[in-house]
Length: 365
Image (cartoon, rainbow, N blue to C red; front, side):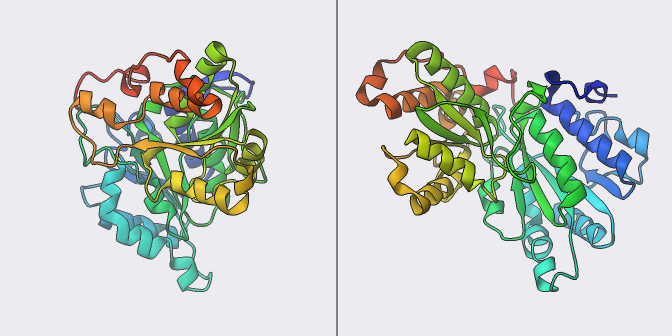
């Protein structure tokens, strides 16, 4: 039994991202006998990086099922299960593997409700793992949230904390009657979070954006692990330059919380968007579009965007560290955005890569 099951509801309880996932999976299966989990390795000794560990023994092989290397066929089975009253939670241990199931996800699951006039629903959760660990290379390290968010009918999440998992997953499983894509960053799994002490989403559902740090100098809209990087950069700037940055965890990529974003940008006048994927045609571009269409006069400086280099991910660690945006660059961009040329004189943090800070990888895989 994972640590997550020992948590109480007290503010400030500590929980890892992994344990939040495990608790969400366990609680969903306990509450609803129609919830089933399927995916490669969900029943083995690693249990999808620990997020499904022990569930097969507790709930049986009929509800926690290993699948062969046949992503489109297995996703088709999940879609069929959802159409017939079950709630499938399917896992892809890398988002890249979901590309083999795009016909089922994009052409079928996303469109069933529309094609049949609302008479058919496909409630299901598809968990996809993104993120780096040197040696993964170009085919195992993509971050494809924008590709899925582009498709009407798909709800796309990028939870950045244990709280986001614990608040969002139960809600979508119980209330959302359509397919959900959730991208979980691999480097977050071992990170400790204070459950209940973090900002909750705004609005009537837990899907909205979360203001995780208040500040008046500039707004950072970030996704996934870039939320944590933005918080580290904001803390550094507050300590070394007296600059207070506001950080917003976007949380829901497909349906961005425009009210929270615009209220913040209107107050700060400056915007930086930090995503885990490429900038072109992605989250960075979409947030810029929203601000430019709704309130361009709120900006007192051009928008700054950060994302992966416009190339496939290299395999060598030294090149991978250059491929991903780092803390020094994020801090420098924010300092310059707020102070102009004088921002170049602000001392910068060390240049340790995310893979060294959040999870020390010793080699490929």
